[in-house]
Length: 310
Image (cartoon, rainbow, N blue to C red; front, top):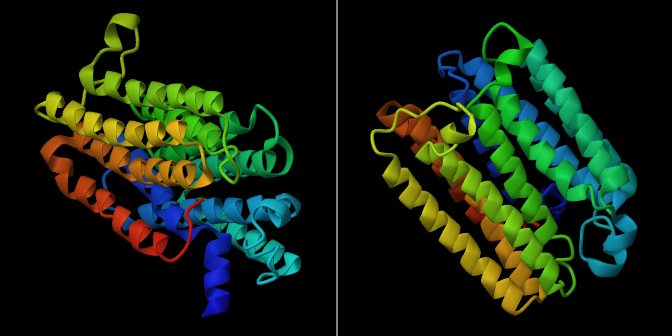
């Protein structure tokens, strides 16, 4: 059991469900209907494999830094050997790419781009200013992966509204990554404040879709089927206030315990943001899908009691 837990910690299993929620969002935003369950299942496998492998590769490349800052992580503590971690990460990545291939050629192309971004982030750019941009790009591509079975052409996935929404979530995660950049030690307040601005820019982008505010600027994203967008905006405001309360706590006291709590809240909020997007796009026809997506927060919370998401 302890060995299983070590591998679950290595791949940060509680955070997986945020990636699966992205797949539901992208799939349903693209106009696809969940009739061919095999396609959704294949995309879920693709996303899960790539997301989890990215987490493992992250620890592989960071093993020396973790030995100083996080010695209890599976690799520096010796609970998982470097060789075993490489095999685990490679296997997960192959599972992800196989799932993408099963979903279709377009999905495999998106998964291939996502794989390249994972390696660039983990192995090359993590200590550079470009790191948050590439992590946001990974989240963007994960949503597009969900939309990648739409239509007969590769370009069908790269249309509004999923393109706009994926971009907003990418900006949001870019901010979260910046916020978490020094979470293992005392963070600098100016860095947390800068991250807060980026995070809220992503949330504002989602609000602009719900409220139809982008049309005067020439962005015809399309309106959702929800009868009353004000309800969605209210729900988004509640999520945003919850996030910003955690941000305020961390800026006031930038110790790891407060910063990491904020990061966990922001990652879990991705699931709720995805559920809101599904409901806005589909209206009453999407209630069951939105609820099913929102319920993904439960396994994240349960597993989060057992191991860290960050």
